[in-house]
Image (cartoon, rainbow, N blue to C red; front, side, top):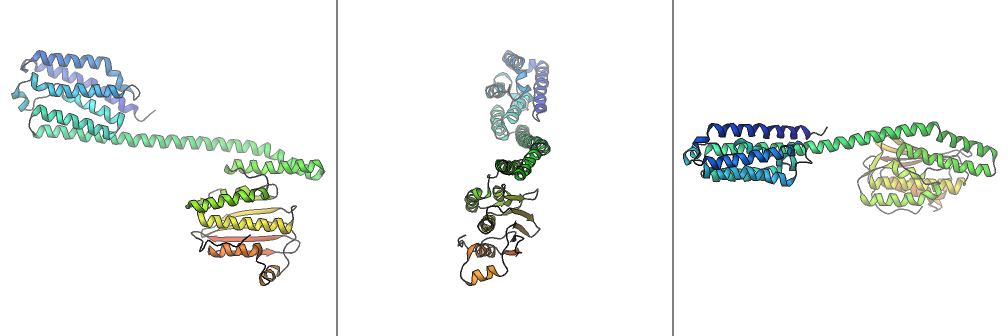
Length: 397
């Protein structure tokens, strides 16, 4: 149920009850009016108006702008008509106006329908009409005017806050429902489709020939589907083909600034030849630092393709530590002979390794290699949280 509905019902009840009060008040003081027939004509018109429009305040859809203006017109008109039908003595003594407290209902309609700004305007019009009717700044008149103004503005503000809260709650419920449906689909897919694709990949690799190609394609689709159901990110089919779009994405992130999720930038590298493992929660770094880290990972994967061959498999592992983000790139290639990187640097052949070290050094981080000939290579990239690049110059990869 909408939070506004009880307010509309309360307003409807208020208008009906206050109309009854106005009728009783008029009946008791009918003979005291200077022109009782004029007062009777207004009260009769107000009663007819209420008879035809009382349902207008039962919901926001029925309470239109034209109705609110007409309701306010009846209230202001009744106040201004009071000096014409009542005696000056009763007016100066603080006697009630023709619509009396029914007037507040017209103002509250603006508060509930349009918010506190429209309520303030409607209250101001009623205040001016009351001052014109009384023709002086009497204390009781000012008291009534301020009371109506404060009450209507406060209710209008509460209604606006309630509407915003209701929209937020509705959005939260939609997200919760979507998350539950996503989890259900992920369970179903994991129990059926992913297992079948994994079996096709294994059997195809074992059979060889055309079946091996079919197994490779099944493996790519398994990785893509697993990434989609777990994080909503669809990777490119192959790591080699994905490298260039990732670089463009990282460059775009660097330009926008602000924190970003490292997982989202690294996920497209996943494919049949690259396994991507990530935490369940976002791993955030400053945009420039995240872009440099992703570029370093891309350089490490380039090194795998160049030196380990197309048949090598790589693994990317993202770890979110309290003080740093650690990304490990490991492959099952032939490994790097001991001292090979140092010899290359002394000979002036900077290559990918120095490019990676340079990027991490600018971030205040580090890059460490662990390689055993015949057992593959592991590169551990560590970036402190809150790091920012010291410069924009980059060595070529």
